[in-house]
Amino acid sequence: MAAADPPAQAGDGFAVRTEGLGKRYGAQDAVHDLDLVVPAGAVYGFLGPNGSGKTTTIRMLLGLISPTTGRHELLGHPMPDGLLAALPRVGSLVEGPAFHPHLSGRANLTRLDAADQHADPATRHTRIGEALERVGLTAAAGKRFRAYSLGMKQRLAIAAALLAPRDLLVLDEPTNGLDPQGTREIRHLVGALAQEGVTVLISSHLLSEVEQVCTHVGVMRAGTLVAQDSIEGLRARQRAELVLTTPDPDRARVVLQRAGVRELAASADGLTGTPGEQPAERIVEALVADGVRVRGIELRTPKLEELYVQLTGEGFDVRG
Amino acid sequence: MASLLRSEIGLMMSRRRNQMGLLVLAGVPVLLAVATKLSGGGGEHGGGADFISQVTQNGLFVPLASLTLELTLFLPMALAMVSGDAIAGEAHQGTLRYLLTVPVSRVRLLAVKYLALVFGAFVAVTVVLAAGLIAGTLLFGARPMITLSGTTIGVGAGLWRLAIAGLYVVAGLCALAAIGLFVSTLTEQPIAVTVAVMVVTSAMWIADQIPQLSFLHGWLLVDRWPAFADLIRQPPVWDSIVQGLLVDGAYAVVFLLLAWARFAGKDITS
Ligand SMILES: Nc1ncnc2c1ncn2[C@@H]1O[C@H](COP(=O)(O)OP(=O)(O)OP(=O)(O)O)[C@@H](O)[C@H]1O
Ligand SMILES: [Mg+2]
Image (tube, rainbow over all chains, first blue to last red; front, side):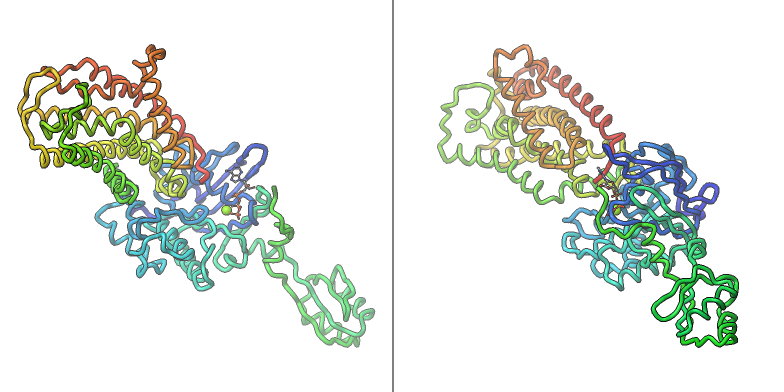
């Protein structure tokens, strides 16, 4: 029985691995030469602005569309041959919820579960109840899907992804349309699932939305993966900035240079620079010892969000 | 497979539109029986195999006459409607991507969808026959049938032949459902499927009426659909019915293969 399998038995410790994966629509490369690696057990934030190719990638991963180039593996199964073997252990949410409007939330889940050959009909009722409970939809389960609010629809789609025990969850913008509380709950849910050993691939426009739960991040820009790293790795790429407020910039410049601070630049009321090995307290000591009047000193680490914006570009227009 | 098929049939029957469609199908025999009763049963129809002229003398002819009446438009329309929902409707709603990622293999999905359409054809024809039998028996009574050959068969034998005639019509509709399923894999607009299937059916009926196209007639799906009338002869004449079944089977096989060829590798972008 599939339900008894231990979680995350992914091949070689990778839940998802793609090699040169690409999808061309007409003249446009929607996704180009993608080498995506999601380690088993990771919570992978798949980030990128509108039209950057996140959903297209996810559709390829799940076998909904065939890649024009490249290969990929899902839970150790090579695609597309291993699709039917891998998908029972994968829960997914692709480009928003979609259900039959005239059926209730519960009836819609029942239909999906009936479609699953691996699902045990005897436990169907319980599993559906648990999934609804998990997304906080128990009270609205009997309502027609047509009458659901956007957030309720989104929650139902997440419940559908949780109908069976999973090794991998692929969630395409799961917080779309959710209120702040709902967004927080989804974060908690993802965190809890990760604790249980489920690998999660979660796409989003906002790094800040997933930053707290992610262990890994991949950033898409115009169909290309421009960065992929663990969160620590990403943080390590960022350099802190020293901001000194002083009426004696010239004298301070000499001291700071001696203390190994590079890239010194004058600001309106002092200096900024990139600190070297010396800790901040030593630098202050040296400054004071040389009679520099220190009005304020700050070691500022830029937010990860700023790095993300750098990677994806600031422009508002989506690519054509 | 069985549980998905059950779910599929439940989904089809739960649609308000389909329930209304069945009401319309049932309305025709009732209308026919009531109108004939009210008009005092003027049998001014000259013979032929449309059974309408025999209605007054025997209620068992109401279901047969209704089959004839609904075969050209209402029954094909019913199948055209549900085959629009089959794949195109799911694609339009986006539910197709969630079925496929359950996962349901594409060939299994096509098989289930087709079996559900077959069930739909069966239900549609059963509704016509049942409504006709009830209305006919209530208004005109059930008597031994005078066959087209002039001899008489008992009520029991008549009911049997009615059932077989129904199954023959179902077979024709199943072939039409295969065409519908194929068209359903081509588009994401269910209404486009319905229109296309109706256009194809009507075009075949029209071509079947044009003598200059007689070389084509044998190949038209609808050409032998009315042959169920041959069952109301004594003994029944099977030639056209067997040929009709062969044509139905050929259409079903060809269009199911086309549907499979189209759907197996299709990009699901909805
Ligand atoms: N079916 C399609 N036909 C043609 N082009 C497509 C199709 N689907 C997607 N594209 C194009 O591929 C590119 C990537 O689209 P995709 O939906 O993957 O973006 P995304 O990152 O999911 O965006 P969003 O954040 O808005 O959901 C876009 O330029 C889009 O226009
Ligand atoms: Mg998207």
